[in-house]
Length: 219
Image (cartoon, rainbow, N blue to C red):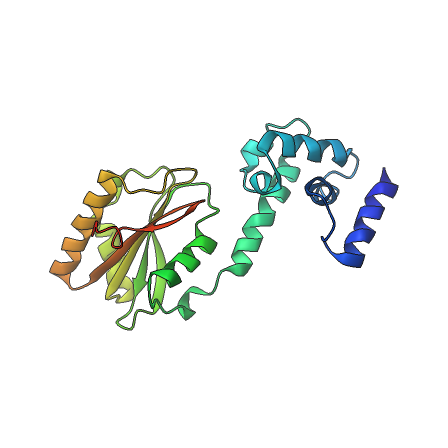
């Protein structure tokens, strides 16, 4: 077994991941968490249960541990891979200037597309549309009724922001706005009109893409 593992490592050192099957890639990764288990069988079991490498890497540690042979250490390692990749690909928030919806889409895909818990946040902008901060308003199972206007107002005041882009994700959900999403967006937009900041848009993010309420005529 150790000879097979070493051959996989040497293949990777010589040519990178090129030529590896999905099972071999996952198998090599698992050797660093499972020093005494047959990672060939375990990688095959994971790929069969979750339908491929991409889906396996997107699973939560709890889901991964439903596969026999996957313990906490292995689950964290698998889950960590994609999270680190997205973190390294994401640009630093303070260097981003929002020049249009496509800039927001690119940023959101790297920040929220892979998150497994629902998150409702606000991008706070200055008068030049430079991103000042990314502020969480709610995290977890988000009930639109619990997103209080004062939470947003506190963040706007703290950062001296003049523009706001609302964002939330639908993990595994449909790429569309609910009536509650539209109602909340309009309420926060009215608040901004009264208090001197602009709600520029509200984006919804899923694994399959990003939707703008303004582009859909809902704001």
